[in-house]
Length: 242
Image (cartoon, rainbow, N blue to C red; front, side, top):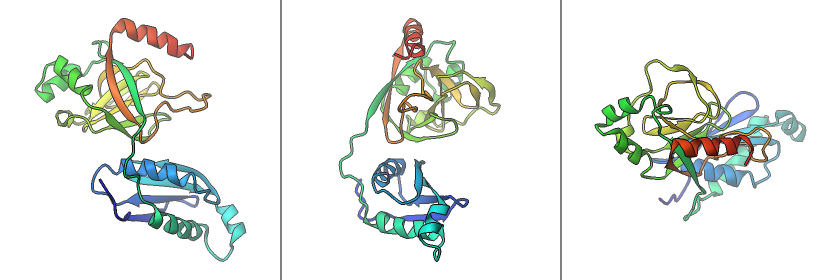
């Protein structure tokens, strides 16, 4: 898809964050990740972090530093003026090849307690559900909810099912859930209401690693089935830091 001009708006979010919302008809996350990467190269004064969402960017900045530079104009107005120039001049890459990451998934019944219900919803056998879950690469739409927690989409239309009416109080690390044609991977044990279809032995978040999050917004993910024996082996390797 080509974009002749980027349509956007800015809104303040507290005293140190500005939200840029992109007006894009489809797959806006493919632009937010590109735009976030580009803006990080522009050395915006006072900016401490740029966080891409599905259709938004959160731009965090230091109001005190901007006040010191220009006390006649509010920090928000200063940021807005700089961003207006950049956003009106930016054009997405006409050819963009995302990084592809293969995520091994064990669909053993122990790790897929909701697989029978998912199969019933889709009108498929459990085996067919597993095949469709792996059939196409999906985008990392955003990272959120927990550190390293990816939202992946869009899955096959048959996976347009709601989340569980009653969330689980504890979902294990590495669990993979689906709902609303999206998939998530829990980076740590936590409550959660997604329908669990499998589990990966990979660590989604490593606090002391140079790149803590295994996945980044804008990546492409392909799921690949593994056996329970392979899961145990890969999990041991991940825990040892391999």
